[in-house]
Image (cartoon, rainbow, N blue to C red):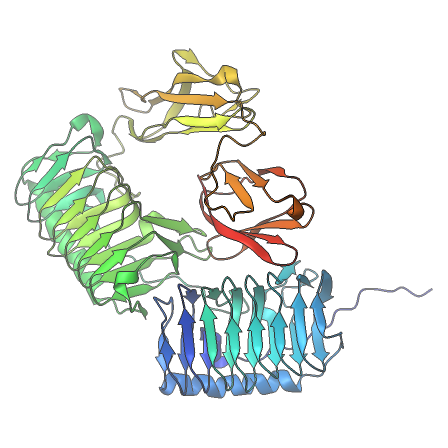
Amino acid sequence: MMILTPAFIFAQAPNLGTAANYVLFTTNGAMTNTGISHVTGNVGSNNGSSTAFGNVNGVMNNNNGATAQCAADLLIAYNQLNSTVPTFFPAPLLGNGATLNAGVYSISGNTSLSNTLILDGQSNPSAVFIFQIQGAFASSAGARVTLINGALACNVFWKIEGAVNLAAGTSMKGTVIANNAAITLASGVSLEGRALSTAGAVGITNVLVYTPIGCGSPLLTGPTAPALGSTICYALFSSNGSLANAGITHATGDVGTNVGLTTGFNALNITGAIHPIPDGSTGACAADLLNVYTYLNTLPYDIELLYPPQFGNSLVLTPHVYSMNGSAMLTDTLFLNAQGNANAVFVIKVYGAFATSTFAQVVLTNGTQAKNVFWMIDGATSINNFSSFIGTIICNNGAVSLNKGMTLNGRALTTDGAFSVDSINVTLTPGCTTNTNSSAPQITLQPTDKIVCADSAAKFVVIASGTALSYQWRKGNTVLNNGGPISGANSAILIINPATLADASANYNVIVTGSAAPADTSADASLVVKTCKPVGILSFQPNSENETAYFFPNPFSANLTVKLTDASELNSSELNIYNAVGILVLNKTLSDKITLLNTNLPAGIYFYKVFGKNKIIQSGKLVSE
């Protein structure tokens, strides 16, 4: 009797050498960018210039020893791929839902990628995929390479004897090496891998490209965090200057100054000590703060962000020491990606003043912890209204202004300068063992009013400080219990799912108790439940007459509704939602005019693309809260 077992083909990955550190490179040619592209990895040319790039999460190299070494290493890798013996000979049209296992695939001429190509690792993390294409390579709009069953982008290689053109919205995986030809990445392309040419221009437009993780790539840990000493217990502090508050400010941690007066804070809203005049504690904090600044200032940087005024704009940073040699402006969103390492440390050094736009935000992804984020600023610091900021701010010789409605998960300290705050919320990162452990519970973020459609979920959130906290949600004075549509009645998050018209009320609140008295009761929050027609849509106006798909609500929590306005797109439309680093987290065929999605996505910023008739018909940004 003959027993047949699946055959595993083991190909040998090439040795990329220093080329592994580059996400975009050419041995001979220009390197150009159009628009705002998000790039992680080194960028450079060994015989040409790199122009119009914004801030890159990597080192920009041109015509130097590093690029000469990369050119040599790239040629070695190309020769290894070129000499690998092929095992499969597919037709020159890849994709269209086909699934390929590990192996070496040789195609005799020009090749195209359409729709979806699936690479199956068959549960083997060492599975290598090599494509030897003896001609040009192009993708259709919205084409994508998908990895399943343990396949890794770091083990996928494309050796191409001709020009590479990835059309708008293509999602590509693997290291692309074009031999003696140009590489073009059109708007909306996402590449987890590398785009390298032995001789040819490389041009990108509004793309997301990043080096892959795995296959022996180094685990990014960042630098050693500074020893905070007594500063760890201070939320707001100036070594030399007044500290003044306007409005209702909530903070966990001490507030004070070592020279001047601390005014305007309500003790009921501060979980920690208010130091109205200098004392022994403020003296110790001033000395320790100088040590922290000195440590951060002397740290050598890994990456220089070359365009400080363009900081933010959905830039993604990984665990490193970053430097900006000038005044910086954080606009929109900054993502800090720990790549799964919860102990990874980020240090961002600004040699100049620092400010944010209104509603700017710092977003932590893939395990990043607020306690491991540090900002060293040589100049005045202003965090604008309603911004959401994360990390420990160490300001040197500059005034600090934390403006109305902003939130800070961390601390803000200056060595010399006046300090002003206005109606803010500060949550101290963990580590202080003297001021907060024995404190009574204190609500630092109140639940907010909600408007939802009937039969969708309503969520109330409270944040409190203190020890051994317990929660009891109420509707007015009526205690709520878990069961039926209610969950989280005894946690920091109350969920009513589904909410009905009977759940509408103006007085949802929570009592927070802890190891020390007294308990703290939140302000009332209202819940408005509306009958929405069609189901899942409250009310909306299109952002543009040309929009095909409308999304509601945005921001969303558990549920997201999509409405198609063009009946011709029914049964031919598809929705992809990607996280901040371009990983596909949701795929849905839109076969109905109205689709209600149960997303269950973590809080954060997401990007969507709607495909119709093999092209991108709409894209945009979504927010999960």
